[in-house]
Every structure is written in structure tokens, then in C-alpha cells.
Amino acid sequence: MAIKFSTTFLLRKLHQVTGIVPLGMFYFVHIYTNLTSMNGPKVFNDHVQDIHDIPFLLFIEVFGIFLPLAYHSIYGVLISGEAKVNVLSYPYARNWFYLFQRITGGFLFFFLLFHLLNFRFGLIPGLNMTPVAGHAQEAFQIVSREFQTTWIVVVYILGVLATAWHLGYGIFLFAVDWGIVIGEKAQRLTIKAALALALLLGLVGVNAVFSFVRPCGLLPQSLCEAPRFNRTPNAPARF
Image 1 (cartoon, rainbow, N blue to C red):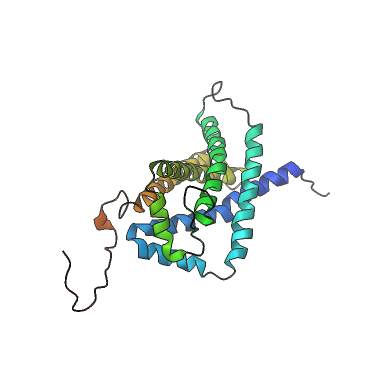
Image 2 (tube, rainbow, N blue to C red):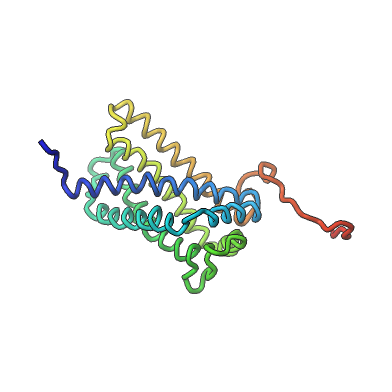
């Protein structure tokens, strides 16, 4: 007897997969690249250049990032519209977590659109008009210059924290819905691990934001690689 799946079931499963496999993997690569800003412009720009040098980069961006992101975001907004908020009647932790997942998803829909238009394409009038794409050796300066504006820094901090929560708790939901984690005890341990991951990603993400305006971000500068300056032989020292 053939097993039949409803269209809604398949669409929701695809929504979960796109959030974990292409987008989750991309986020870890993205956050690692941003963390290299702790060691200064050259290190960060060189990592961005390495990404630019990946073969078939445009193909990877379109089919591995943009299309999955568009589907996950749009379908996520539709799911959020169907959500029934019951935290006031049933103020359990899992109900609050579900509400936070919907709220962060809605915020990220607009934040990621802003982020792409601002840094990937440079298409927001009055803000950055130089896309990072195609300007790898100017990448640090582009981001650092933009982060001189306080409200943009605040928006990105909120975006980083929202992404950290959405991915961390999303991993827990994926593990439960796909039957990877079964049993109350296993789910309790998994949700604790997911929340710890969300906290870790949030902290390192916020530090990465500040690394574009201060060497090593919020951490002591002694923890980061000291910048190296190439001095011309016999050139007089400058004080």
C-alpha cells in the first residue's frame, strides 16, 4: 500500500530542511568569516577573497542560498500567520520558545532583505552603495564604515541575536519533528544543548559586529593576532 503525503506536510518538511541544511551550513561559514574581522582588515579581506575565488560561486549563491532563503522566509511568514498565540493561557517554556521562533522569523525576513541589499548588492540609497561582492579587498572598510552609524549597529546586533535563536531552537524542532530525538529525557537534553548553541552563536556574533569598529571586538586585544605592518627598509620611524 502506497504511503501518501499531503502537500502541506511536504512543504513544511522542505521548510525545515532548507533552514538546517543549506542555510544553517551557510550561517556557520558566514559567522566564521565575520569572526576573522577580530584579527584586522587584511585577515578578513583575505577570507572574503577566498570565498570570491570559489568555483561556480554564483551557482552556489543562487541555488544554495538565495532560493532556499526565499522559500524558507516566505513560507515561514505564512506559517507565522497561522500560529495561535496561547502563552497567556498556557505560559509554558515551550510555548514561549515557539512564540520567539515566530517573532524572530518575522524580524529576520526584513533584516536579511536589508542585509543583502546593503552589503551584498549595495542598493540602499543613503547607506552603503559599494557591494562587498566584487570588492573583496575593500570588504572590511565597507562594513566598518557602515558600522559607524549607531542605528545600523543596533539593527545588526538584533539581527545576530535573532538568527542565533532561530537557528538554535530550529535545530531542536528539526530533531524532534524528524524523529531524531525521541523521549522526554532526550528532548530535555537536546533543548538545553540547542539553547546553549543559540547563546554561543549570539555572543560570538555580537563580538564579530564590534570587531569591525574595535580590534578584537569586546574581547581583550591581547587575545587576537597583532596586526603586522610592512615597513620599507631604511625608512625613518614615525612617531
